Length: 248
Image (cartoon, rainbow, N blue to C red; front, side, top):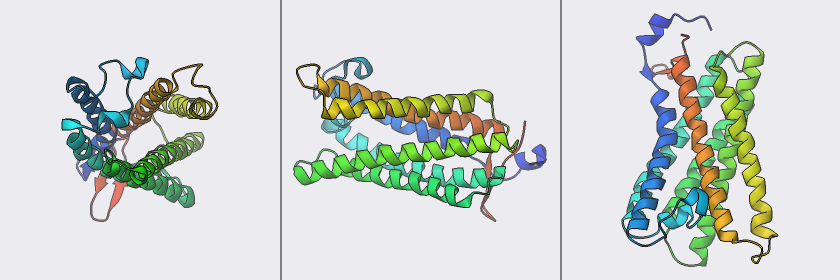
């Protein structure tokens, strides 16, 4: 990857902001919606990461938050889809030649974005059908986002083993810890939601806590990608459309 740093820095458009926005926008939207709903009295005022007093969905169902959540999360989904398409180009530029896995990663990310839109559109609607669509939307969004993150981590680890990628050490370590944590929380939600008796614990609160932490770790993954893209000085050239990457 012997590219001239000065030449790269003068061409194309910096893309580090895309990874930052992909993580930051949904984080900000969800927390503003939660605070607004609590102020308006639609949900209890608490720390949802510790108390699990309300779900993320409950934060965006009523009042100001109903509109704000939709106006924020639909653009967040568009950013998410764009992020994964750019990740594919980035890995190709780093020297990854497994085009099948790269397309699978990009498709998983794009599918997750599409179902995030589905979930957001139906949030706040009443009826069994709308409830079913919300549930499908959030399940597919979380599942396919996790698969895309797992594939990106696997390819970056592979490239590092082949000495084709030089990233800050904490990036791969952090991503590995996040992917492991996501798996633990995902697996923990299965017995809590399906096998634990309501008399043993407040299942709704525990499920809400898992959901909040799962979402937080998921967006932290994009923040780590932001650090990686800043270190690589990743940029986009429009004609021809490609990603270029430089070294510090």
